[in-house]
Image 1 (cartoon, rainbow, N blue to C red):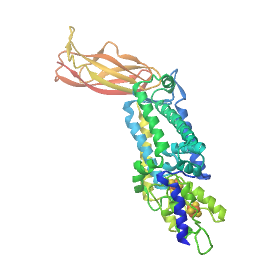
Image 2 (cartoon, rainbow, N blue to C red):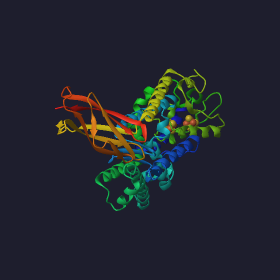
Image 3 (cartoon, helix red, strand yellow):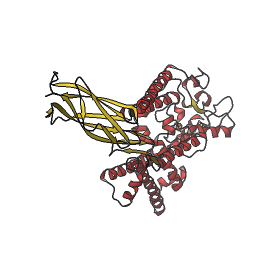
Image 4 (cartoon, rainbow, N blue to C red):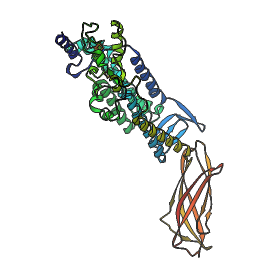
Length: 463
Ligand code: SF4
Ligand code: SF4
């Protein structure tokens, strides 16, 4: 009986993989709900956050904005400057380490539930199903020669995809150019060249990746699918088929002689990457859990316990450990340890971050200048960056192995979140017997808070 069943299944599955195009069957269940929950969660944030206004220092601006033109990143009250690159680097390493830890714990959870490729493929597939019908209707439509109805459905589907891709691109660019300023320029086709380029690029990228390429991105383009295997170990929990329980599979299930798998193929029909999880762990599997939802429904119908396909580790399936498997093992301890360290470094860097940045440039065009009253003067430009969200006055002092004093103003006002270059002249009496150039040190402190203080080295030329 085994051979005919296998042929039937293969013929059926061939339908779903025809010419490489996968029309996955929709399925209800807890993992499907969880996935849609993540779609709503991530997309409400993505499409909504750029519209959120934020009041800072009496002015209203976009709450989250990567202002490339002014080299600032606004994140609610936090304003990051290019000098904060280390903080951003730590934050990115923290995110990457959290991803590695999650992968070691439960395989490609990120891929199946939160990756933008997965999320947009779900949205685009949902639109396709609403326009063209369920997976069988779509398969039939694919095979049908082009006629007016098919053309109409195709135009409608691609039209909705294009609008969604366009809006996604506007939203994306709206995190770099304030979206309230961007939208009118899009409506009047008067965007700047860079905005136009990124709008077209990102719209085409979304349309192709989510509408046309879909699972091919996960299978052939995503580098993470290739190297994530090194994070797995026998205790990593992945979506897996309980082979000993399911086999020998048979359409005519008989207690004692066949396994619980009735070879219905529904787990394959619902798979967005078109694989058969019963063939074992495969790099194409994104751990979405839809085959679990499908198989659980089949098990309910035939009166067998759920979990023929489930999240399980190699150790659990081999009966070496009881579910849920070892949580504490060397690999996890290393990832968790690194995560704690880099997250701590991120928090510490943020906490220690100075709200004042100072760059000192000595005026090299005019070195030392001797004045009529017996002083030697050097000119400097100090770039004072006030990172705080309120205007401040800063007091500049200078010291070194000379009798140094500042000629003229030594207190300067700097607007909130801005950089102001100020000119400073430092003088020393003629006749101090020192080498031609001596090191000096500027100290800049906020007038209202001496704790906001920065020291910066420079040099003083005596001749
Ligand atoms: S859904 Fe379950 S019973 Fe049906 S083929 Fe897949 S593993 Fe077997
Ligand atoms: S095999 Fe199952 S978990 Fe893996 S991608 Fe397919 S449906 Fe998702």
